[in-house]
Length: 342
View 1 (cartoon, rainbow, N blue to C red):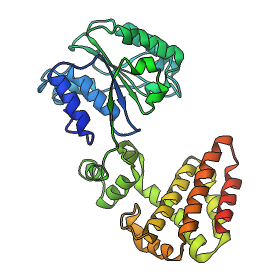
View 2 (view 1 turned 30 degrees about the vertical axis):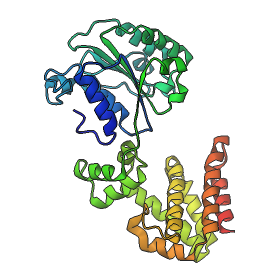
View 3 (view 1 turned 90 degrees about the horizontal axis):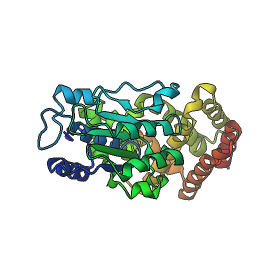
View 4 (view 1 turned 180 degrees about the vertical axis):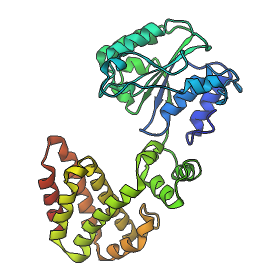
């Protein structure tokens, strides 16, 4: 059942024991960073209540019921009415509440409250997932509390969040919490190469960029990432070897081109990673993210100073924080690069 999911073996063991003993709490809180598999674990647990051929209480992942349970037709992003209700899979006893934009609509929680009182149609129990549960406003959270306080015996509610502190304490106290850790780099690399058919080089790079999140690894395009890295490499070369301010301003213009506006933050993050790798090489460390361009980074490291590299990282981070106050990106980027050049 959980075999196809990577990482978090301690959570697998807990859920497996619960299912085998038929002692799954009515309310579970799945907590961890974005992309570590919380929703996938919650859905696999939900399927166990519907499976026609369970193995020690766990879903077989092979029967028609398991396949129906994991197939959802989600509402379109601009269909507000579609987010006012529980979205059911092809199985009538497994549903999910999704945020509409930045909020979970109170109507969706009220629909869940109503649906939770119905007996299961086919499964042993009805299971409802609340994705990004921290996006409930006070009205939605208070509506959910009524169901959590006296849950029907045949209803289970799984809340999924990367920000548990944003939930009402009264909601957290009524749920048993399962904490998910970041996934090991080697596990992500193996998964990408063996199950997703990425090349060995791409799998290695993406696994290091993932920061423990399989979701982040799958959302990155290695080809596009390398193209943007080439631009940021020009920045480092212009700063350390060529001393070319004109080239810096040209890269700034490229970063702020309309076609790149959605990737501006990624450009800055790539530059930070390159600087950090350069610093690591200066300190004699062997493990770096951009291992495929090690010779170029070693050449740059020979020209760099530790104090400057540390200062650059601070300046980039300060710029990223200042975007919260709506700075002009082009002017701010030009200023950053000129400041780094000084």
